[in-house]
Length: 491
Figure 1 (spheres, helix red, strand yellow):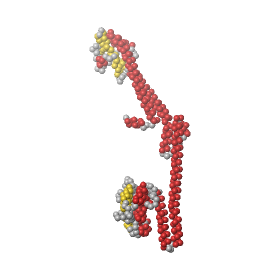
Figure 2: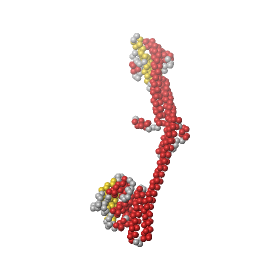
Figure 3: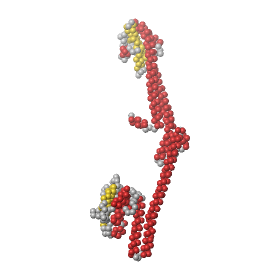
Figure 4: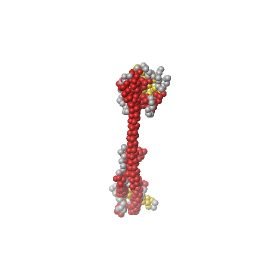
């Protein structure tokens, strides 16, 4: 039952109302039909009883003399006259019985011979002695009338009546009611469907336009739909169109603001890049001119080359910060070759300090991580290690891939990690802006590690220096980025 209620509740209103009207019409029709048929049956039965009573009164009066004398022929003649007199009563047979239930005379002598015993299926009717017994399934009725003289029973009259015509009238009335009620239910349902359909059609228009709006293609309600809608829906249509226009204006304004913000950001970026690059470029050009004129002097050459290095390093830091700010798409999987060319990129820094590089790259197959991000992290860590390492020291690099994670370790023999280094990594991992001054390389590392959902551990070495470990999960569900810092300042 609950399932039927749920199905009915989910039906559209244009179907639900006609169905409800049809059901109510059928219920009312059934009740009215029952009342009409019950009243008709009562009227027919009362009429039949009245008719049967009159018939039995006439028959009993006519056969009483012959029954007193037990004269078969006189009784039979009385029955014949009574049947002709009451022709409106359709009798199948009339039997006159003696007190011992033997047949004295019958309108159908072949079926009920004289002095025969009443058949067994009729005997109970005489014993019950009801005035009228009905059997609608067979279309028959039996009337019984005992005949008494001076409180002494001298016989009984039994008549079988044909009531099939009466029942036919009742069935005709029943089918008429069924047809009429069915027609009324169909007419009311159709009228209800048309009426409700017309009433909810404006809502259907709004629903269609809302559906189109949710898919990103909003449309205004046309003037033709305005003309077809009832007057009470015009205001609703106007408000809907106003909402669509307002939404379109807001989206256009948002797009314009986003474009302006984009252009402003590009302008600020270009202006900043131009300013930060143009300043050292002037000095670099002067250094080149100086080197061109006085390059033969050892002191001038060294001082000029040192100036060129610092200027180019500043430009490199500015470009690096811009590249990190722009989040590039993920690269291809990491291979062994992607890391093995990094020593060449730091060859100048290693050669300048005569640093010994211990290189262990144990990657065998392609690792499903962003190769570009890992390369940039490794390069920044190696450059920072070169900058922090003293003359003739050792830098260790180790990379290995297990089944569920990739690990990269960079260790140097410098003075250790200051508090600013930890802050730079933390700031980069949180997505905040790059710090002013030093720490840009570690900020870049923290930013890229957060993009990889990697875990970084920063700590001091066994005696001095720093050990930085990067762990990148390789499973389907990556752990949240976690930066754990444990550092001891070395004076």
